[in-house]
Image 1 (spheres, one colour):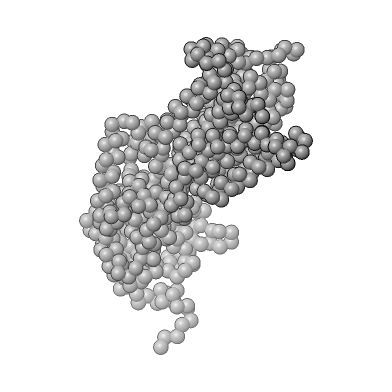
Image 2 (image 1 turned 60 degrees about the vertical axis):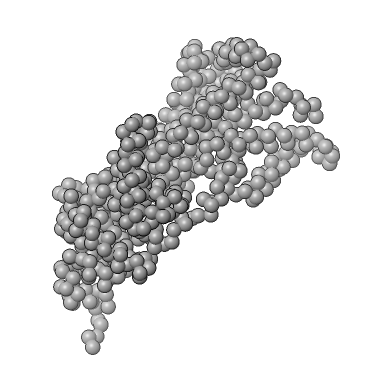
Length: 256
Length: 321
């Protein structure tokens, strides 16, 4: 179930700016790996390259040993690597339930002409009951038939999270899952994420600026700066790493 | 004013509205459901009509084979255009489609040996011989008229065109309610999200484009049969924008809003012919033709101001971002 992600010497430039500049990292199957770094470190660009939304200029990406860096986003998602976006991307003019059911994989009804098959109707029923379960998990089941555009920003964040679970991912890339979520909902969200690892065996790679969350949730932390990986290790090792402190506070900070 | 009261005239208006319904239904599927900005819909109507007429006149095909092939060629042209063009961003795709529709019209104007050139379908046959592509259709229509027991040819055509329109509307309505239609709507809302959830966005867009083009091809055949003659001038980009007006007037993302929009548009377009009361009657007929377009424009602006979501659209969907 868990998947391993390996990134080798990845480079992606925008004009003269090398947003990702030879990043190499390894995400252990079944782990929660935090990816941190100051703004502009290249974290989001790395996410976009790994999930197929940007083509890397060089370097390679492997999912369970298979090369995926030339594949289209939908093929990467079908292979089990699914990502969320930094800002909520709920489909606002569709209902909350439709948002989740949409994500069901291997659905014959999504093929033109396949919708009439009995198999497709059974799959639709399965997908709907699974979607309702997922919505109950984040207590959005009461809004199932509301348009997703009527949800608050935090609720959309939760909707996006359960929607990717519908795809049955083996590795999830979460881009700032805590951003925009109210402080009261955060402990609950943390629990859901830990349960994904412990109960479902999903590998997680999480970009997050809330360092408190990263240090508490992660088994392993990777630090990026200027498009490269500058440090990695357990949360405790990273916390005291001189290079990490330099990256966040500037290289010439005074130690009081 | 006598035409206003004549049933034949209004039957004719209804036939044209039916043809527009089928034509705009393709655009509704493409834009209203899949979010594709197609500004070249008229090209596929032209391709459908010309393919049918050329096969009948030049190759001696039966109309009943030539028309479905015309529809298939229109759909295939949609696929062929979409394969490169759908890789572009939405606004660039729109530019390519309008360019494509003009290319089709210019080719039809200049490839005399294939299309009869600017003289239209009358020049499809041998030199000095007025070509006809609709003999078989006329016989069918007369027989159908007799079977219906109506006196007007236009009424018979009305029943045929609207029968076809209702069947096609129902098919599209069924299709968009399936999980397939759900993926289309997801792509309309946010194609990156659809792709991130494992949906093959390009494949779905191609399907929507091809089906919509095929529907334009069907409209092209009916257009050709209704008017018994056509030329490249019949396929000006303006026709595409008529379809846009119909779709927006009726309401986006709704199937049954298309015939409503087409009926309103057809009524406005035909009804404004009778603006011959003072002070408008002081203008010459040619000037009045322009006044008529101004009136249509004003009425449409008024309707859109009053109901931005269209006649059958849902306002609560409109205000969400």
